[in-house]
Amino acid sequence: MILASHIAHMADSLPASWRGRAGEVVDYIEAEDKDGKVLGSGSRKDKEFLLLYHLVKETLLMTRDEDGKLAGVVTWHRVKKPWTIGQLERWRPDDEDGKDIILVHMLARDSDARRCLLSAMSRRIADAAECSFHALRGDKVKTYAPRHINRFFNN
Image (cartoon, rainbow, N blue to C red; front, side, top):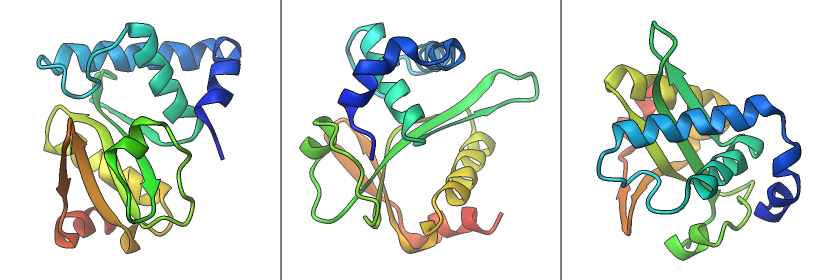
């Protein structure tokens, strides 16, 4: 179980490549998300810290295009019902046996990048086919129908 406080104590000692990757993701999101909805407001350092948190707990995935440039990123939380947005904002640890996957920071340049991210998620989350998927944008939650998600599990 990874807590945000664990990352706070070790953020400066993480490999430089990890910190560089977090910075690259912040650059990508800020360039592609003109409205600032994906990462919201906050300092660059806070955004990088958030991404390092997801990187360490293995809930951050990225995809690249043919030229090696970032084409998409997603982070998620795994929780049990009932869950609240406030619970996610408090950075509570994931529930290892939770069946709700909350896509929190997702940005994909196109449908191929989105497909690649969700397909990779289905491999990362062993029981993904048994979970419910939701997307969080600000204070709104979108629930995906199983038919929309299941097509990615068969790739």
